[in-house]
Image (cartoon, rainbow, N blue to C red):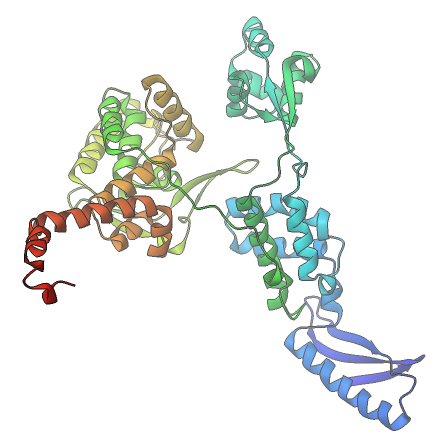
Length: 473
């Protein structure tokens, strides 16, 4: 029930809105000021209407103190009470990264004051040059010369600088690293960062895909504000987003894929087996490295994708469920894929037997190091990159092996719904959008089959057109 108090020239309307987390009653308040020209009778009638209106608004979740919380404070509460409970660590880390820039733009605004125009202005700013806050640095040959002169291993240099080993590897190869990492490495060498690195500020605008990522974060938080009845509607739903360019999957054609397979057979089985198996199964990298022997039935040629092995900077590696609910799936694998796993298992069993108690396996992972530990995700990526460069194959990543797998199936006119299931896509439309070019090529080939089937029919039709024109339109 609402209470009304006279306050100066206006009226304060108070409505009870349940019990808060602290056990105290939540009260929503608003001020209504009548038009000075209104008669006492008009004020009385309009005040009664305003009371009913505000009660309905509070009941629906709008108005009152809930909308008075600033966005930055609500986002922090969202991360604590929702994000840490329901988002995967990788998603949570991405959200936290996006929130830095979002809070700079609208963190000071109260939820009830945020409009689609505020969000539209934020998205427009993301498309302006100079918006990037990331400054990278590229090492000069002086860094590698200093490291060699000191006879420091990459692992030791990483330990002293407080950065990851892959970061050191990137820097020594002349690839861009963050300015913070460059400063830490330069400090170990006792040199100004400008001596060992070329600082490269990035002034280009953010891509449409990145802006869509910011929108997903912002919309998710505001959607939760609606559900928690802090605001009546999600203002992010009214904002316009830049159009996304068509997603084109990068994959190897069949001759290059065959050549890759042949070359991999001469490589160390530790690395060759997971790469070959990925090419023959289409798993995501995290799914591939999370695979356990208990998930594989070699006799039946079946595997169950039930977990993934992920890495988040600052957090480390962790086991999780696959990317989406639809990604948990059972697959029938080829005879060749089964043969690869059998050969690999024989090699792995030999290592386990020779190491005895030194074997460090904990959960029966399929692909492991020589000591039985899970393979670090970026290690497989780094090995494949070196292999590609060494063999002269077209540029490929672990993820492009997945695209190659899908493209090979579609080229053989495998039903789209089957390919979507094997890839773990929740909807076949996702598969169709990503592999549109391959599907079109398969459709052309399918039409060619019908042309060969009906070979000569078109010519016969032309020959008969004169005397039977009414039958050929």
